[in-house]
Structure formats: C-alpha cells, structure tokens
Image (tube, rainbow, N blue to C red; front, side, top):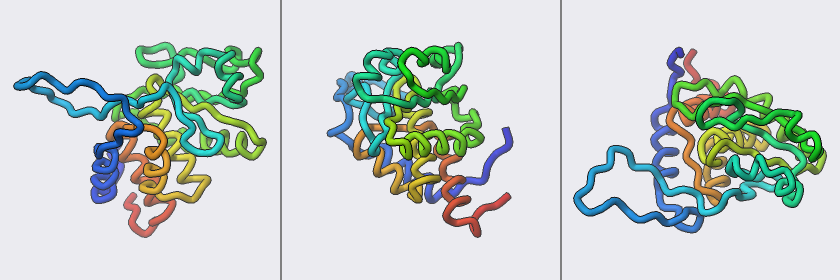
Length: 204
C-alpha cells in the first residue's frame, strides 16, 4: 500500500486526545500486576455495548448487530457493518440477513489492521448514513467492538456531511463512547481532514 502523507501535528493531537482519560465512558479494568511489562498501552473498552454518539447514529458491537429483534426494539432502520466478511474479527451479515426486520444494509469488508485502506469506503458510507437520517431513520454502525473500524466510518460521516474537522468529530463521538481507531485509520482520517478543510496543505 502506498504511503499517504500524514499531518503529524494533527495525528499527534488526535492520538493524545484518544489516549486521555475518559472514565465516564469506559469500563474499569484491573491494571497489570506490579512489576509486569506490557508492550502496548490500549485504552479501556467502552462501558456499554452500544451508544448513540450523534442524533440518529448508534455505534456499537457486533453481538447487538446480529440480534434483529434487539435492533428493532432500538428503532434501528439502517445498519452499516464495517467488519463485513468471514475472516477472523469480521461479521458475516448482508442484505438478506436484515430483510425480515426491514433494515437497510450497507457493508464494508474492513479488517482492523493499520494497512487496510478504509478511505475508499468513506464517501459511500457517509452517503448511506446521511440518506438514512434524511429519511428520519436511525443507523446502527458496528464492527466487532465498536471502537475502531465503525468509529472511523462515523468520524468520516461527520467530516463529510456535518462539516466537522477531525478534532471536533472525535470530541463529539468520544463524549458519548470510548473509541480508538487504529493508527492507519487515523492517518487516513487526518489526510481526509486536510483534503476537506486545508487543501492547500495536501501533498500528492
């Protein structure tokens, strides 16, 4: 995959924001034993299986996404599966799966790895979500845990359709759910931010 130019200042600011404390939205987990060594410092998981992170947009886990009756109880009319597929850490659903529940479906075959090109899916997913909201619908956006792939898609929507720069979009979503897109997705979002709002800074 070709390297995309990265706004390192913005990338660092967003990483710092995502790694900062967010106690209200995270489930407390016991820390590592005294004297132990951890290679990676991951933030705590979200407290809830799902959260409404923007009016009409619910961000959450896959186990809720495969529960049709639960989705109907929540008033979900549209669904974005940002982990569509049969590989490990993907969710094997499609249009047919949701027909009996009258839920419109949009799938993205993403893997939660930093080399996956998520940006080609930004515009189509933003259009799908925007159209759903225009129809007074309610959209469930998910991956496996509802923190990386699906969060990236929601952030892209807010940037494309609600005129938010990345920092505002992250702050908006993170105020309602703990999220943590992987570094590759964050770099693609930083590039999108400059494309949309600072095109003079974009390098080809």
